[in-house]
Picture 1: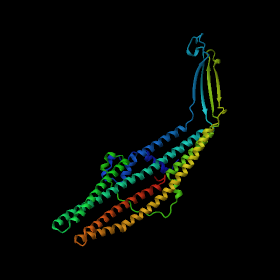
Picture 2: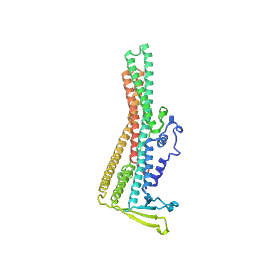
Picture 3: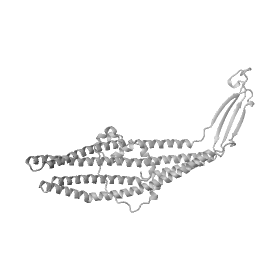
Picture 4: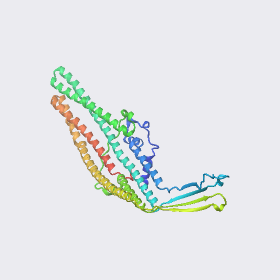
Amino acid sequence: MGSLKTIGALCALVSCNGLAAPGEVDLTHLTLQAAETLFSSHSHELAAARQAVQASAADRIAAAQLPNPSLSAGVSSLIPHTGWGPGTLRDKQVDSVVGLSQLFERGNKRALRTEAAENNLEASRNDLLDGLRQQTLALRNAFYDLLLAQERLHISEETAALMRRSVDAALLRAKKGDIAAADVARLRVDALRAENDLRQAQGDRDKARVALSYFLGVEADAERIHAETAWPNAIELPASLALDAVISSRADVLAAARRLRAAQNNWDLARAARTRDVTVGVQYEHWPGDVSNNTYGITVSVPLFLFYHFDGEIKKAHVAVLSAEEDLARIRDLAHAELLRARSDLASAQERLRRYSESLLHEAEVAAAGAEYAYRRGAVGVTDLLDARRILYATRLDAISAQADYAKALAAWQAATQTAGNP
């Protein structure tokens, strides 16, 4: 059985009582925590994983049961030309037999079958936890994509508004002869570019809303979604990580290990088929007349392995064990690679974010402010002003992209290091 933490988490997952419905969450002020609450109760993938757990639990119940006994009844000694004779049914001139038989399994078959089903059930539970891990990461990526799209839209709106004001001011100066027509044209070109960027940002925001709405089960209300969550703060990466301990505790690795144990149980079960089961029966036979004509009997039957010894089933079960061993090794290697990649990506994203937050963005803002000031006093031309604005615009977009990349890298790191006991 899994740990109490795992079982408690599964109970929370399988039963969605108390989780928020879409109407109970303000989509126009959606936080990440509220999004995760909606996701837990409306994810199609998690619903399928819950049903797989329920199916495995049903298999566990079936595997633990004893074989049902068989009841048989029949009549013989029927003589058509003399008839059945007079009297009640019990007095008819026929031989009636009632029998009861029970199969007794040998070779520990029931225990092996039950243990295999139990291991498959635990594997399904860990599949559910791993599905939660993966889908939560996908949800957070979709949420951060929307947050990024909203920030980019905000930057594009500010830039487009600035360019509109600049064009209006340039037109007034052109009428007075203070600025050349070519400079007005340059401002108009950049203003049109800003409008195109704004429309693109709006489209990206709308697509991000649709992508997030799928996880929340609110596809019809996608246009109402507005993410409101602060970007995650930078964390201190651990100097070292016990990779083997984390990998061995991950839900996907535990699920593969359980399936290996189930395959081994099934291999033992296949070999146990060579142990003969015994069927024991008792019967009561009645012939009308004196009570001494009633007889009782006992039967015992066993199969005779004269032509086949279950070699095919045993071979197939052995191949399944080898396949499960290879699958466990593959999943452990993938988990190891995921951990290393997530750590590297997080460190890289953290360094990139630090450069933008500590120097690049500030320098671009200072340069743009200086160009605006110099342009208003005629110290620089339109070309220098537009260059400074473009650099600031691109730097702001890159800075917010760096923030989103860090948020996603952090989510990936948290998912990679998540264990089954702490879902």
